[in-house]
Image 1 (tube, rainbow, N blue to C red):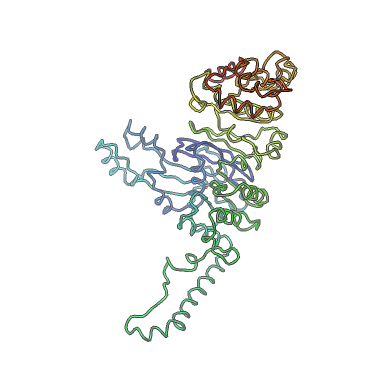
Image 2: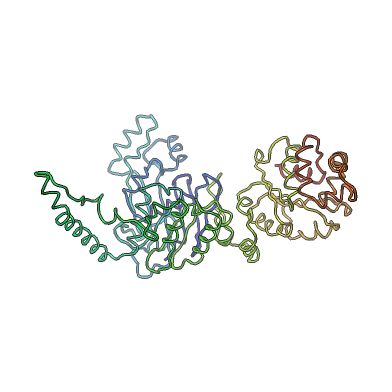
Length: 519
């Protein structure tokens, strides 16, 4: 039971979006406001099949604002936009009532739709409202319907799909916590077991009132103490989750996040079909994030959707499971075609900046701490602005990792300037090595003179007076250039700290920066 495709129409930030999902794990990444949370919400709302939930969210907040604004250019009943969420499933076996062509693609498939559209029987009232001409959008006159692709209604009380949305950004929200516990409880019990539990719990309350409170009630006269037994005070609302007999709400935020996520990811086959995780790394330490990744990798028999800002999660869960969302458009890109070796590299490599790279428009990759320390100052000297002001990012990676990043750069068209040493062989190390990565958005920059083999030598040649002034007085046996080669990061920091205003930028680095910011 897998969701293989999502289609959104006028939902939140998306006027239209189509995403093909992977069978087991889907990791949504993107900048703020790119729509990661909206995708999880769309799946959640469609699977719930609850009008009340839509009304709680607010149809005016779910509708795409651009479609609403654009409507007023015509302002007629016939051009009122519709909000639609479509979930396409793989073969649902004997659930033939989900099979049909009542979908936007017009093809026979398994699936269900959430549709919000103007109610035809109220068309006269809507027309009168629009005729007032005060840009009053008639949200209150919209119907909220859930349909299977066969055309039959999708009813929330039919538990054909079991899912949970766990938003760790709402860890202190009592309502969200209670809903989470209720969903987990419902997924672990059969209707028969639930009815038995409710009956026994109500009976226990009655026995407590009759046996325990009876003594005090003899003293109260006409007014007596009782036990609440309404829809806000029953077994499900009173349930919590404990660890070592301690209520999780008395645990720290990080532990709460971990327990809730781990509980939702349990291996039992018949509990949850779909798990939606919003920023599961929230409040977690580095070690617990790694433990969480292990739990996700071990999870079986359920499809998982994750929205994250974590480098660790996005790389360790295999970049090929990543779906990239562009904050400036309704385009999604996945990395399915990434080479096996590159995907494995980022899963096994030391903690990296891969997410920063993927989310960048323009990137300078450097291979050492010394270059990284000075690059932002170089950028300011060349452009008069900070890198972020020109949508540029500077990332330090190990020199052997350049090719791995460039493969991603080719797939995602990230403009990437590699700044590296020629290591005494410019042709082999800077040209031949990257011959398979030639692209308009990729260029490698280095000193072309093999004698100027490293960044430190280039810095010394370009800033001889500065370097001698800073480092020569303390030298007895080593030359200034050799000292800079031996103490790369320390020397770079001292140059930045004491001579920032006087620095000259090596020519090949100046060329790289100018190429990067060029439109």
